[in-house]
Structure formats: C-alpha cells, structure tokens
Amino acid sequence: MSKVVLITGGSSGIGKSVGEFLTEKGYTVYGTSRNPKNYTSNAFKIIALDVTKPETIATAVSTVVAAEGRIDVLINNAGVGITGPIEEIPEAEIKANFETNFFGPINVIKAVLPQMRKQASGLIINITSIAGYMGLPYRGIYSASKGALELVTEAFRMEIKDFNIQMTNIAPGDFATNIASGRFHAPIQENSPYKTPYGNTLKLMDEHVDEGKDPLLMAKAVYKVMNTEKPKIHYKVGELLQKFSIVLKRVLPDKVYEKMLLNHYKL
Image (tube, rainbow, N blue to C red):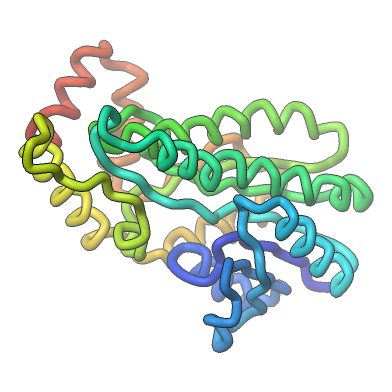
C-alpha cells in the first residue's frame, strides 16, 4: 500500500516539484490550491485548501481521509513572500503574511494530528527558509514568519513524540520558482528615506530567485527525509554559501555577522 502524502501549496513551484517526484516514486499524492480548477493537468490530485481559512483545511483533510483512509505525510509548503522596509509595510500585510506562513501551517498540523494519532504514525515536514535563521534587510517580516515556524517545529516535535508522529523542517535557500512574482512588495516610494537601498536590495533579491536552484533538488531532499528512520530537527537545502551563512551566524560576533550582511546587500 503506497503512503498517502498531503502537500499544501502543491500547484506550483517547490510543492509541484515535490508532488511530481513523489508520484513517480509511487506515493499517493494530494496537492492543494486555493483554486484547484486552474490545475487540471497535474500528475497528482489537486484539492481545494486555503491555509488562512480553517474550514477549508478541515474539508481537505476529511476529503483525503475519506478517499484513502489515512494521511501518512503532511508537507506544509504553502507560503508567501513579503518585502519592504518594516516601517512602511502596512500592518494588514504583516498579519496576512503570518496568517499564511505561520498560523496556516499550525492549523493544518492541528487538522491532521487526530488522524495520525489514530494511525499511531505520521511524518510532518514544514518547509521554512534559510531566511528564517537571520533577520534580513527588507525581508524582516518574511524572516520572522519562517523563523517562528522553525521554533514551533522544535517544540511540536517534543509534544507529539509519544504518538509515534515525527516532525521536521526543511529550509530552502533561493530556488527558481514564482515566489518573487507572488509576494507582497511594499512599493518603492519616491519620497521614502529607504527608496535607494530598498530598490537596490529588491533587485538583488529577484536576481537571486531567478538564478536559483532547480526545485527538483528540494523534491529529492524531501524524499530522502521521508525515507529516514529518525529525521533530524532541521535540514537546509541550497547553495553552499547560503547554508554556510547559518554556521557563520552561530560562530561570529553579532556585529561582525551584521557587517557581512550589509556588505552582501551593498547597504
């Protein structure tokens, strides 16, 4: 019997690549989208789910359980980017980002846990970001929402270990996806004191995404973790320099690391 996998945000980018790869490997995959009717040619089923709407989460989980009788793996992949000077990002947009990147995954986890507890087995993989390990200029809110999910993963693991349910997170670096086009950009205002540095940083960020790694690497990483008997707490996938930046943050004095980031972003 093939394992049943639920992937939030499975209609494009990393989620789609993971879903296609796992389908090829023989898994029964359900991806989710807010508008599944727009994705009828996927290699796996796409069902309706909006992580900011708990009622759609409950319906999606019930749909999978009714069809398959179980959910073996949840991959919390749905997420959105956000950029801008923190001073100028509207509060509503900050809250919206956390609704998708933080509260959404928690609510999906809550929805699948009763079924996994009933099965006495399960694996939950939270897709975070290398950006969640550091406060990046003009990406501070994104860093905060992904960093919060990293910490919640650490706590959740200890709370659910007695149920034979495992949890881990995989933090990708820059991958060639459509995240740049889908994220909220605080507009570059003509009279803003941040106009020049923010504009330059935004251009640099978009270049990093355009030159990013193939999402297939993330799919292979997810597959490897799924076939690991006892997954680690944290995994990082991306350019060597991006992964090494996390190591440097642990060992360098704070101000030295900050100076390194300022030089990288030419600030």
